[in-house]
Structure formats: C-alpha cells, structure tokens
Amino acid sequence: MTFDELNNLAAKAKASELRDLAAAHTPAPMKAAGWTADVSRQFVSAEVEAALLEYAQQENLTGAIEDLFSAAIVNPSEDRPALHWALRLPPESDLTATEHATTVNALHKATALAADTTVSAIVHIGIGGSDFGPRLYADAFADRLLSHVELRFCANVDPLDLELALAGLDPGKTLIIGISKSFGTEETLYNLERAKTWLESALGPAEAANHLLLVTANPDRATKWLNGVPATTLDMPLSVGGRYSIWSAASVAVMASFGVETFRDFLDGAADMDRHVKTAPLKDNLAARLALLDFWNTSFMGFGSRAVLAYSRRLRMLPTYLQQLEMESNGKSVGPEGHDAPLPTAPLLWGGEGSVGQHSYHQWLHQGTHIVPTEFILAPGSRSDGDGVEALTAHALAQAEVLANGRSLSEINAEEPDLPAHIARQKIHPGGRPSTILHTEELTPARLGALIALYEHRTYLAGVLWQINSFDQWGVERGKTMATRLKPVLRGESKADDPATQRLVEQLK
Image (cartoon, rainbow, N blue to C red; front, side):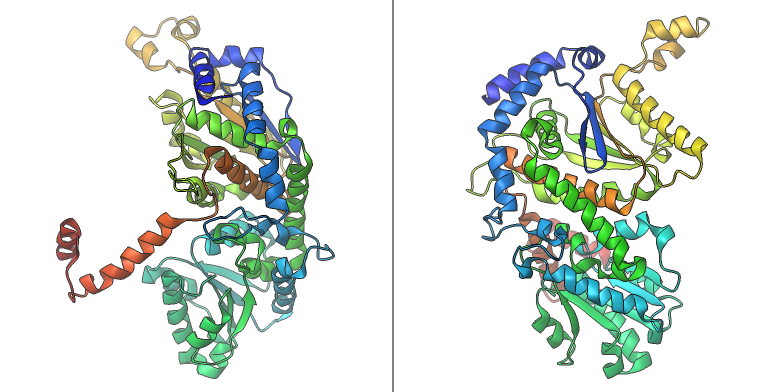
C-alpha cells in the first residue's frame, strides 16, 4: 500500500457525502477496558478501512506494540525504552522492581501523608507533565478529596500563581511538593525557592525542610538546592517522560489527597487498557484503529485540527492534558534518522467541556469554513439524576448528527416556508464534518486511567505511522535555552542577537 494509493482513496472519500458513507459502512463499535468507540461517521469506507489495516501491517504496527511492552529502545534520541506502562503493573509483577518501585514507594509515602493529621494543606509545584496530570486528576475527582486536606497547584512563573496557592495557609501545617525530573526546570525552581523562603520565614531552615517533599530523578541536585540539608525525595525513573508521569511519584499529591486505593483503581484501569492494546489484533485494537484514523484524517484528508469535546464535568481539563501528550509527542517534522517526515504529522488538538462549548465555538464547527474532525467523549460524572444524564446524552448525539448530516436549504424551506430567502440561506448547515464518539457509563478513576492509557498508546502508534519519535521534545528544550539567554538582555547587561527581540525588550522597559 503506497501513499499514492492512499491519496487516491482520499480523493474518492472527499467526493463522497459523509452521510452516505456512514449509511453504507457501519463498522461494529470497538470496546476496550470499559470504553466503547463508534467511528462510523468518518470518511472511511470499507475499502479505506482495509487499506489502512494493510498499511498498518506493512509498517509493522504490531511489532511497534511488542517493542513498547518488551522494554525495547523506542526513544532512540535518548537511547531509552518508554516504561510509563510499567508503573501501572501490579506490585507483584515479575518485571524488574526498578521499573515500578517509584510507584510503590510513592504509595507508601502517600499513605503516611494522608494519615498525618498535622498536614492540612498540600501545595503541588510543577509545570508541564509534572502539573497537567495531577491537576487533571484532582479536578476530575474534586468531590472525593479527603476531608482533612486542601490541595492547591502552582505552575506559572507569574508571581501571582504562587501567591494564590499559599494564600491563607499555615506554614506549619502545609506540605510543599516540588516535581522536577531534572531538578533544573526554571519555573518549578523559581516557585520552589519562593515557597521555601515562605516556610523558612515562619519555621526556620531546619524545620522548613521537613515540609518539603521533592520528586526528581536527580536527588543530589535537590539536596544541593537545600544547602546540604537532606531532602525527602521520591524517585522519578529516567525512562518515563514528563508527559507520561501521571502514573509515577509525580502524582504523590493526589495519592495523599484522594487516597491510595482510589489511585490504585486509576492504575488498574490503565493496566486493563494496556492488556487490550498488547493482545488485541490490529483490526480490533482500539488504540491502533484510532491512530490509523488520525493518520488518515491528517495526512490524506488534509484536516489540520481535531476537537476533543468532553461531555463530562470530570473531564473538562482533558483537552489541555491531551494537547501536551499529543502535540509535544508528535508535533515534529523530522524523524529519528534525520529525514523529513514524508507526510503532514500531528494536527492541532483543542477542545473543551460539553455542553458548555455549544454556546461558544460550536457555531464555528457547524457553519464555519473549516472541517474539523470532532471527538465526543460521553462520560457522565454522576448518574444521580436521570434527567441530567439524558440531556447530556441528547446534546452529544445531536451535535454529532448535525455536524455529519447538516441541514439543507430544501429542508429549511419545508420546515419554515415563510422565511425570507436571505435568512433561509444563513440557516444552512453544510454537514460533512466527521466525528467519533467514545463513551462509558460513568467516569470513575478506573475509566479515567483507561482513557489516558488509550490516548498514550494511540499517540505512540500514530508517531510510528508518521515515522517520527514520539518520546523526545527538542522544540521545548530550545525555547528554554533561549529564555535563559534573554535574561541578561532584559537586565540591560547585553544586547539581543535578533533586532526584533531587542526592539521588544526596549518597548517592555
């Protein structure tokens, strides 16, 4: 199966009506770890589906899955495996202890913290992957927060972020948790330094150290930062990237604040999805099929973005989390051997909370000039009231139907015969906007774990199809380097190499 052949199939798909394709090709819903996916409203015919599966076999997607789960080197830039999945294994697993000792250690620490009645507040300081995951978890299950703990987050280098996180707290009853794999992340160290000063001003340096818990792969640097005072640290494994660290000690704050058993449910749900991805044949493998759909929509149908609309109060932060997972992983144009990627790679991912978003950007989705594949995630946070769940479900299904089928001028004239022509034309919905529906009965910790694991595997497999390395992030590193170089320029100690930057510095002064 060649790119030319896939492009020819895409040309046929673009010339087709989506509602006709959906009527002619009705693939069975795919199920995994409590989730069901319906992809029948995509520009995918039976012929396209067969071609994509053939391409997946040709590119040895099954081998890529085996490589991941056998701890082979899948991150050639750093010559490492990617072992985030190992953190989800049961403690009795016979995989080498080092790969999941981080989680076991963190669970023990979390148990002690949760039982410590002198700690009434936890402030989690991290950024990027050291922030998004725990913040998503905490927001998703805010109603399950243990009664004696207040959990707050700080990520932004804007001074206000830490000021708000510490406002009204008693230093003697507050635990500051700092998360930095390298213990060199500028934003995190800035906020940690200010938080340490806040503790020391009230408690003194020795006692302040007892109110700091540092999660890092570089404990020596952490101890040096504390001027030699032994730091209480939890390890982060080098083989787990920041955007995959939700399963690690980076989540110790939520383990302590929501209970270790609840977090174990979260891990178990992810492990269920791992087993599915590891064992299911490609045609039934939910992660592989969604990766192939991303590959098809982006590289051949030409859709440059994808909207994730979570019809669940618990999942309102999911699009933000997925932006880092997918766009930091696959937002690349050069493969690991230094060759240009042969096709357009990862699309822009954006989205929000349904049905709230229906009152803002859904207008653009329905009647704008861009076609955006849309992913509806229907996962009620509570089933305590049937009317609310029914309304949530009806809204999600209605949006998907109108996006796909539209509303023609003839339908409008038949339904509203007295409308002036110019008004009737404004009510036309062109349709032809593809969507996927992912659904589960209720969003629980286990279901959230399974969903995040599904997106992780989908992202990795899409990267394989695009012939890029999903586990490095050189673009992020470059931005950090440039920011460090510009600080002396802002202080007036040197000039910027770039004239436009120098002009901006002078304006800001």
